[in-house]
Amino acid sequence: MESVEPSVEQMVEPLVDPSKRVDVASTPGTLAGHGRTIREPEPFVNPSGADTDRRLIQLWLHGKSEATKEAYSSDLSKFFDFTDGKPLRIVTLADVQEFGARSRPSATGTG
Image (cartoon, rainbow, N blue to C red; front, side):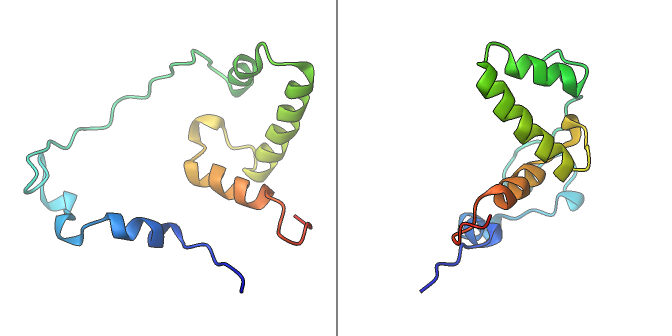
């Protein structure tokens, strides 16, 4: 029998208590019943100091072996093709997960 992976919603659903869900739009300032303040998003912080994708990649690859740099460069090229050249600062977790899922070899070996 073939195993079917559960969806993200199916994996997360047991962790979410529906009675504790909050309509954030109707509770400005605090989470109802939790006493926690809803904070405004922090301004973008760039801890790497890199102002371009190219510079960020250079920093990431610094000190790696030439073979590793070549392998990572190949993977990055495929990723940038997959995201249609989306700048790294706006790449989402979903982009990375979808790329990873599509990049994995299939069970039949034709991946």
